[in-house]
Image (cartoon, rainbow, N blue to C red):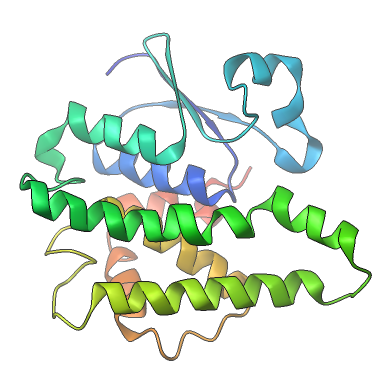
Length: 210
């Protein structure tokens, strides 16, 4: 992969997932910051690149890729030896289910534009925090049950997969919003193991914040 440009927002969970994947695959890329708080994702220039106006966007040799999990799966297919998706078809389904439980069930209803709309519907000062805590806690409870009690190092097996690329950013958000993680022992343990890996460390929002 040559001429790789990554349109990123440092605190975006979706961007965080792809940063981890790029690091695990040792892909050399240029970062272009898209400041969501300043509305950079709504400019005509960015919308021409990504009509949804979301981050991330990854450009590889002039080909534009959008949607974080579609990007990760594309990278996994380019580099199957990386293990982001297992070789066995049934194992791939399991990893996808764990990843989608975060990316399609928790993340969308806790996204910035959704919560911004919520605050327009109510004058309750704590509505945003209550919303985030409720849906993140409920989602992580379900994810903990899906992972189960099997003593494996990561969400599935003994090496990071796409499931962990989704889990780690969600745990970061959970802690940001003050979610009680006491009951999520497997999730906390997996997050801790991932935190020891250079690819995850380099992708952390605190490391890439402009």
